Image (tube, rainbow over all chains, first blue to last red; front, top):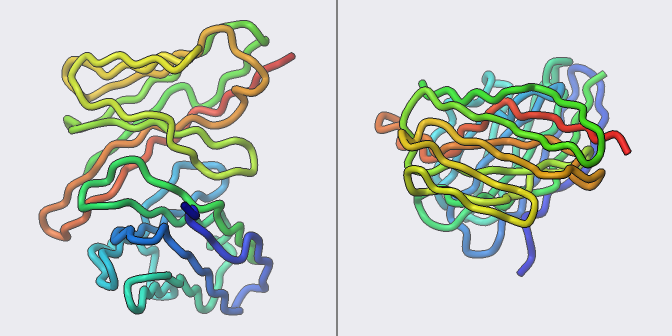
Length: 114
Length: 115
């Protein structure tokens, strides 16, 4: 089966610009998660979708971040306008069922804001 | 909220030496998972422990889940250069108010192996 796919793998943008990250979960996985790892620190939760609904977005840093999952398939995470502290690696993960068993992570998007 | 702590943050060993990373949760966990992230890569699921006191082995890796289900360890015997990476533990978080069912990750232990 295809894994979790993220695009782009790398993105370098200037402060104030907009960037949209995309995640395609494993087909049939209702649960989709966004996480972020900044500067080699812990992997921090951003938000959780169950199908197309936002189950929990309490991890989103601020209102410059907007996530969507139209139709309950792929998801996008938009950062607008980007700030320097948004730099990091954004991981998407998906899992089957309501209990988070082992996640399958995407390869991540490395975002650099300059 | 739930916190998951890992020690050490970093360890540098000579190839052939053993390595252990420890994970502690502020709350009792229904299960604990371990992930490995190679440099430049993404976290890859290694194993899940569910039962109190459970011990599981994967070749040179030994995983333990504490009796109180609040701590866990990963031990690598006779490290190899292929073991290089960051090892994360993670425990599921259930938040009744938001309905969140997600993993809370530890801060990770970065392992460097000197050939």
